[in-house]
Image 1 (cartoon, each protein chain N blue to C red):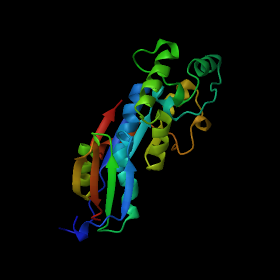
Image 2 (image 1 turned 135 degrees about the vertical axis):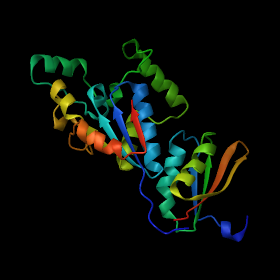
Image 3 (image 1 turned 120 degrees about the horizontal axis):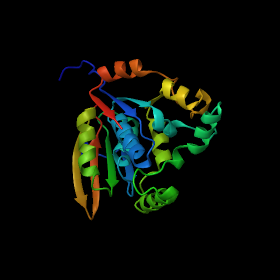
Image 4 (image 1 turned 180 degrees about the horizontal axis):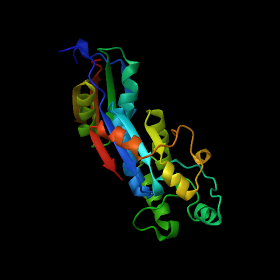
Amino acid sequence: MPEEESHQKSLAMVVMSGDMDKLFGAYIIATGAAAMGMEVTMFFTFWGLRAIKKNVSTGKSLMGKMMGIMYGGDITKANPSKFSFGGLGRWMFNKMMGAVNVSKLIELRDLAVDLGVDMYPCQMSMDVMEIPNEAFIEGTKDPVGVGFFIMKAQDAEIQLFI
Amino acid sequence: MSEENKVDLELDLKGLLCPLPMVKVSQNINKVEVGGVIRAVATDPGAMADIPAWAKSTGNEVLQAEKVDGEFVFLVKRVK
């Protein structure tokens, strides 16, 4: 067998959704890929920013503040894309997933940080939604734009949009 | 079990679901020397596909993947 160091494969993912179920998918894939030795880039845009947000209020302008209130909370406030029922669905899914011992979303995110998954917020979404850098959890990378994502995606064996 | 399959580390993965069985194996593989063997016991049937896939992707070796009394027992050898 040749001894040369093989090139590290990589995965680049856009996370546009802030839905609980889709964030589960995103983090399960990200942690799985990282465990399999891949370099993983997650690019969080628009609703997806919830996934890396702390539980803080955001917004500068009136509308920005309204957005901050309506869209308040962190990853634990993500609702499922179906059966949301104003938070009841989230409670129900958490119960059902707890019953079979699936990791909580926030635990999967922490695991992703531990495994060295790179999480980048989208600068443009932050500007639109008036979410500052300080609103993001420890371990979040500095904001980037689409050019950076495309650079990562060009070199990646797997590209996903969630 | 032959002498070369001496177990260096035991991992209890019971009750863990996707992706954790595979993730735990990957997090622990460097705790054994190259050539060392981890014995992991999982209850997630998905691990039967995932742990060998992990080994294939990372260049390690699954010496054994068996269902024993409703549990899934793996012997994973660190190759590099």
